Length: 397
Image 1 (cartoon, helix red, strand yellow):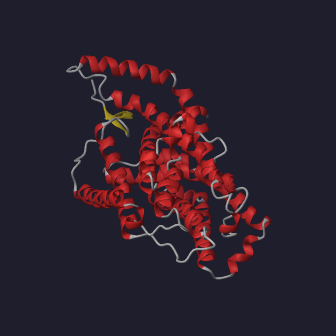
Image 2: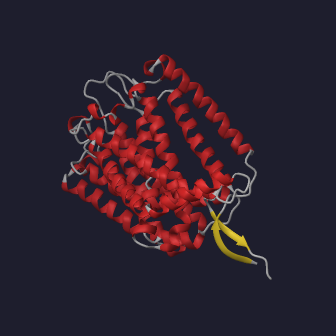
Image 3: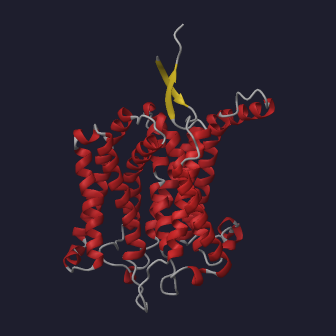
């Protein structure tokens, strides 16, 4: 019979045709990354002096940070607001956040001209307290550290009963005890650090009012970035949980995801209210009628990435369907991703640009390689570590 549930490694074949596709994309991305590091940004990308950042910042960094928000929102719900039933999905959310932030750092290295100086913000003599980017860098570095510490007990759990290596087992028990006793402080630190750098990413663009399209430029851009990150946190967890269940041939935790989905309309509604309200107060809605590419992308972002999934999540019928939950969550994920691309690429128009920026093939392939590596490592982690909660078969006595 089926007894209680607990996290345990997923019993599945690791090497599959899908994994083969991921490995091919990783190899291609690695080849182009090597080319970039050997010959520089000018040779490998379409970046120039007027367009100092491109696809790697918009997708690998800004979007990656936003979509990793499920880690701190789920942890806050389970540990700070004491919703104990959601502990079952905190481990996958934590894993997604940890991998996401790790690859944010790797993507940033690819985008930096002098990538070998990425350690500079960590050195006290090079600190710049007046820089928003310095604050983002410090918060991200600290939060990555917090995520890895929070994940340590999960790794240790794999080895605590290892009779062949008793010293390793004892060490893992000690590490588990220390981290578990300080977990509440780590959760609070993670939430604070996340709120700081999620909002500051938006603040990066506030200093460029003359270079930003009026549809996205606003003095409250930092608040909008924070609200959108919070709004996408639970949909990202739902999307990741359902997709992982389908890919690994597991049963989705529909009852738990339904309960989580009830929070989405509230959080997404707050973000929509501030975004639309800001548009009305600044009267920048007049630009929606100009028929430009920017106006079309803004409407796609708001209509299909915000309003449509908001209406879907209000429906009880949608929340009862695994497929519709997945679709509604995916729309929000894509909507927030499009928002980050719009803010950093579509809205940013350098006044003296001699050409329009469009990513090179190499930029697309490196990004695809990074995403593929993230998916592969996620699969490896859930295959060999107790991450996903599954039913435990208990024998009758």
